[in-house]
Image 1 (cartoon, rainbow, N blue to C red):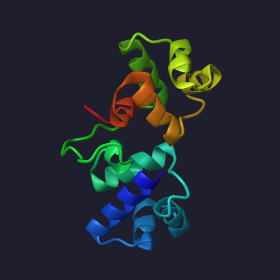
Image 2: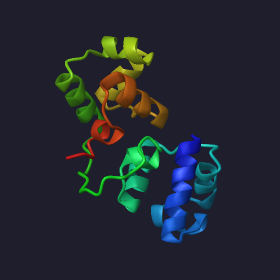
Image 3: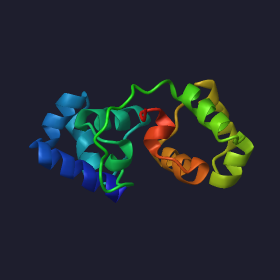
Length: 144
């Protein structure tokens, strides 16, 4: 989590934003931004994408998983259920095999595939890294 908090603080500093201003721009309270910057919480799936979109950087950069953000155009992500199924098909991997690789319960992945829930940020990182060997941005459908 510290990588995310450090990276968010860095992005805010570079843009000259304080916690209140970022909260207003992203539609959340200062308290949430404060928890993120202090390393006490991670954003939701949707809010991670909102942060990355606002700063025009990759989700992987915001999370501290890569050192440089590629200057690129990001796609508007499809619903996670669609993207999850697509990435599973492209990688020819079943939810059972994903479970074995990541330790994430198959029942949780079933809910993702059905569009009932979305993964937490730690599960996104686990899926991208251990599960598929891809970036978080590719997994959520932001990469073209």
